[in-house]
Image 1 (cartoon, rainbow, N blue to C red):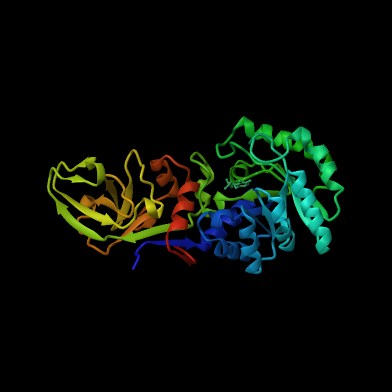
Image 2: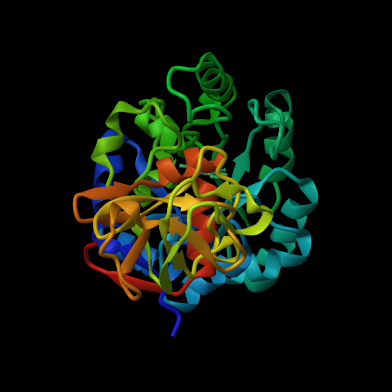
Length: 368
Ligand SMILES: Cc1ncc(COP(=O)(O)O)c(C=O)c1O
C-alpha cells in the first residue's frame, strides 16, 4: 500500500477565507480554485468555501467549471484565461463568466446566447502591465463599445492582474491600479464587478475599495512570497506524510544515492523514504532538503531519486521502518512550511502545492 498521503485541512481553508475576507474589507472574494484548488482538490475546497459563504469561484479551464456545475455549485464562476470561440456553447450552457478580450469570442458567445435564449456573462480583461492576457488600457473603450452592442452578452465587470503584488510595497502595483482605475472609472456604474487584487493585493491592502478581489494562494494558507508580516494569520492547509521504508547503518566512507555526491564521514543511520521527484518532491534543493521523523528534522542525503529519498537519522536514532515521515507540515513540535520547501528548492510555493497535491493520494479532514 502506498504510504504517501496528502492531508487537506478544510477548516484551515475556511479560516483563511475568513481572514482574507476581513482583510479585503468592502471587496467580496472571488475564490481561485483553479488547478484542482492549487492541488488541494477542486470539489472539496469549493465545498468548504461554499459552506463558509463564498459567492464566487475562479477557474483556469471550462472543464473545471463544468465539474463545479455538475457538483451543483451555483456560485458565479469566472474563467480567468477566457475561452476559445469553440467553447462558447459549453460556457453559456454552464453559466460561466468569461474573461473577455477577443472580439471573435464575444461574437461566438453572443450567437450562442441568442440561440439558447440565455445570457453570456463576461468580464473584460485589461492588461495593465502583465503583458499576458487582456486589451491594453488605450483599447478598452473601443473594445467595450464594440462588444457591448452584441445581443445576449451581459458585460458586468472588468478586471486586471497585478504583476508584482507578491512583493509588498511595489510601485508597479500602485501604477497598475491607477491605470485600471483610470480606464474603468467612467464605466463603474455599468460595470459593477471590478477587481484587480490577488492574494498579494489583498494582504497589501491594494483592493482599493473595488467590489471584488481574487484570492488564490492565501486560501491555501501561505502568502505569495516571503516577507509578509501577516503570514501568521493564515493556516497551512496541506500536509504530506509518508513512512520509512528501510532503516540501516552504513559505514564511514560510503556514498549515498546517484552521482555518489554525498560521502558519509562517519558511520550513518540512513532512512529510505518512498517519496521522490515523481511524487512532486523537488529533486533540486541546492542547500539540502529536510524531512521530519519522530518530531526531529532529518537532512536529506544525496540526490532525490524518482521514487525514493534517503535521510540521515542521526537526530532520530530510534527511528524504525514504518515510522511516519513528514515531508510538508507539522510533526510534534517541528514543522516544515511550504515556504521553507519552496525556498530550499528555489521555486514558488504554488509549484510545490500543485505538484504534491496532484501526484499523491489525498484525504480531506477537518483539522491537521
Ligand atoms: C488572473 C489571476 N487572478 C488571480 C490569481 C490568484 O493569485 P494568488 O494565488 O496569488 O492569489 C491568479 C493566479 O495565478 C491569476 O492568474
